[in-house]
Image 1 (cartoon, one colour):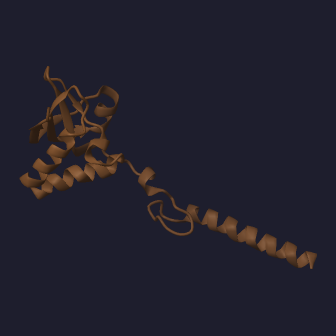
Image 2 (cartoon, helix red, strand yellow; image 1 turned 45 degrees about the vertical axis):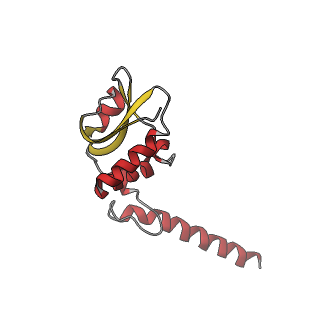
Image 3 (cartoon, one colour; image 1 turned 60 degrees about the horizontal axis):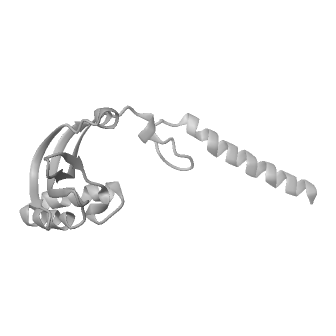
Length: 143
């Protein structure tokens, strides 16, 4: 009985070790069972991206990106989808989104702009450069 238990433990250990080591014999981009090779981290990615986001404008004309929670979600990727959906839906959706955002901004913000930008992720993260912003919609913050 002890020998059978030991054999079953050894077989389970060998099976798990084999499953783990099987990733070494697969194409690095083959992301599947039983172990992920995490190809999203194994391949070189570009740093250029297009983003749509909101800017707050102060009375002095200073602009700053608005936090994702002004769109109604605290999740950055969900906020990005909210902006993208509004742009693709057209002016009525953009006007509605802008008006909603305008009710949720900080007290020093006087207007909201929704912009689309091609930017370099490294330049944004390291130097704060937002890239060339193209105007999509704007609205005033209600007093």
